[in-house]
Image (cartoon, rainbow, N blue to C red):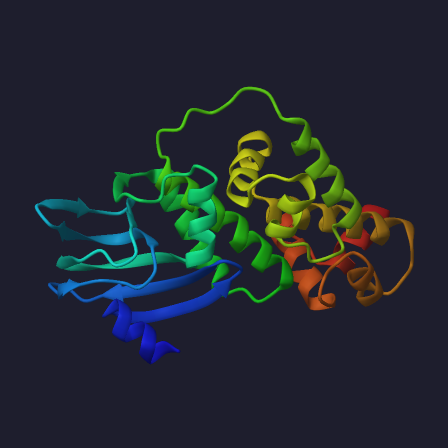
Length: 270
């Protein structure tokens, strides 16, 4: 797949991964590299993680430094010139049927938009990290972050709504009941009959984290409870609380609590 991606994006492909309705690509461009006029088959969002470049679309041009975010229509023709620092981009490519569904729901997808957004850069940086992770929850995290990034790119000036809709509480209930399972964001949105993009954005606004992070925290909490109240093997606890295996639980618990499962059990009991 990488040679095809390299030909499409004309840069060095660092990582790539397909997630639900998206394809994520981390691509690096050399200093002073020039991309002649070209187009892409699919619509996509690009976020500059480092460096800077100039993108020209017809008579319009946008200078993108770190945080520069552009939503590109499918088939639009543009050209790029990278500055002496080169650049590293995170690209979120959107499947055609999913984009059509957004348009049918009244979400504008027929225009180019550009902004300089630290929040988009934050989302893209997290997606870039998720690209190198392989545990099941990382796919859910990536899907939620992708929905948020697309929402930000399409409607960057949308005002936040106050309060929480009833369906959001239902989402939390579902996650608490099914945190051991690998539930996709699309499946979750279908359960409460809202669009996945709207779910991802509203969930973060209310709970200050993406759905995947919320699920991971539920799993960590459940594993910690089991470590304290039972003498079951750590591998067994990992399996019954949604982790892939004991090493997966150890890695995540160290990230959250700074200790391994065995250390957590010994320290808390002492």
